[in-house]
Each structure stands twice: as C-alpha cells, then as structure tokens.
Image (cartoon, rainbow over all chains, first blue to last red; front, side, top):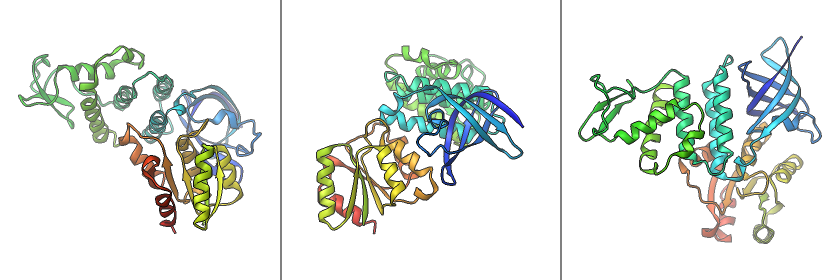
Length: 230
Length: 122
C-alpha cells in the first residue's frame, strides 16, 4: 500500500457509520480525493483538528484499492478563523467550497487549490470587500475552465473604446457596440483586472467601484451559468 | 413537541424557553453550536430553533455540520435571529438548501409568533 503526504483543503464532510467521516479534499498535487477519517466524531481524535473547514492542512493517507483513501494523520497548517466571525463571509466561504467541489474532478489541477487557498486567505481579512472577492473568484473559475471574455476588441474587431457603450454577448463572450449599451469603460477595466490578477490582494487598492461592481458581478455570474453551469 | 433551542443569550434563552414550555412543549436549551450538536447525539428533537449569531462556531456552521450527518438531515429548523444580511442573494438559496423552514427576525417576532411557528411544523 502506498502512503502519500500532501497539503489539502476540506471541501465536504459527511458522516459514515458511527464515528467516521468521509471527506472530499482538494490537494495541490493529487487532485481531488475522497478520504475516510476514522473516529473523528470522538472528541479526542487526533485527526479531528486537521479536518476543519476553511483551513489548510497537511494530510497523510493510504491509497487503497477503491476510490476511497484512508487518512492516517492530519495537521492543521492554518485555520482561517476570521471567516466565521462574520455571517456573510461564512456563507460566501461555503459557496466557494461548493463551487470548487462542483467544478472539479478527480484530477483537478493545482490552480484550483491555489485559487481556493487565496480566496480563503482574502476572505479571512475582514476589511476585504467580499463582493469584489466573489467577482474575482468567479472570474478566475471561468478562466481556469478556459472561458474568458474578449476584453480587447468588440464583435466587429475594433478596439474597445473608452467612450462607447456596449452589451455583452454571453454565449460568444464578446462585447458589441450599442448606443444604449449597459457596460462602459469602467466595467471593462474592472473585468480586465479580475480576469488577469492572479492574487486578489491588488484589488484592495480599488476605490469607488460600487457603481460598477454589481453590474460586473451579474455579468460574470451569467457567464458562469452559461459556460460552467454553476 | 421536543424542541432544541440554540440561543446564546441568557435572558433571551430563558424567555423563549419558558414561553415554549408554557405552550406545553419540552425544551432543551443550549448556548453554543458544539453543545447543541452534543445534545443531538443524546435525543433527536422534533424541531430546532436556532440563533445564527453564536460564539465561536456560528449558526451557519452549525447547520452545515448538522446536515452532514445522515441522521440529522431531516430535522426541521427555524432560524430565529437578530441578524440582517447584506448578501441575501447567497443567503436565501443557501438557507433553502439547508432545509430551513422559516426565518424569523427577532425584533419583529413576538413570543406568540415564535410558538405558532414551532407548532406549524407538527
């Protein structure tokens, strides 16, 4: 039997028999795995502390014959405990876990682990605007799935202008020039930023984004529904 | 009915507990998410009345944790809370998914209304 040691973030926990838990874990190098943690419902279990939600842990597990691994040890690296001090952050944290779980398969790339870890770290900072973080998270999910809007040229191939108004064709992910269009240069600048910034921290420098944030969130949510089905 | 009341505030907990008992129900009152989970291990309630704003582990964590156990997935929950949420777009679908029967906002909920909400579950 092979033993593997790696980092992991818990995506889901479900009960199994009286004292065991089945965990879905996202790792940077082993993709998404399902592991059996024995006896974690008992208060003194050595495994229990390392399988907290909103945490980064180090885990060791044995690869068996089936798809279910057996966890042998867990060590908590960091619990992002500020998340649960705020109800909106807690809800968004669960949404992040759910979306990543829905979108990833067994062989999930390291980028998904990095995206989730960065998002939990940012969510843990109580001064980080959560609407902006959710926008960045959703944009990065789209990007990892290979879906990115054209933020350079419009549907006729002309460069997107600072002075024009546009609508977005969600299916083709391209803006088209329309005098009554809802989106302008400010929306496009914000979208460029959330799609290209690999870490959310630069977003904290943005100011006065409220007028464009909500419409940008709706736009990215529509793209997610259309292309990633979440 | 056997009611698990999860309420961190001493005065409010006592008040709600007495009102529910007076209406003829059996009430077990817990002040934290962990003690509420421990209580579920002892006896299954007919309904849980839950404040979301708890110390250490909040009510949303309690709900996700509770629903992750097969035997606790169908217990009806009434949220009775002081909180107002800015992100109702996330909050409302998630509450529905977690099987929350009703959300009562404390400042707008009389004791009568709380008792009625509990009894509507029968």
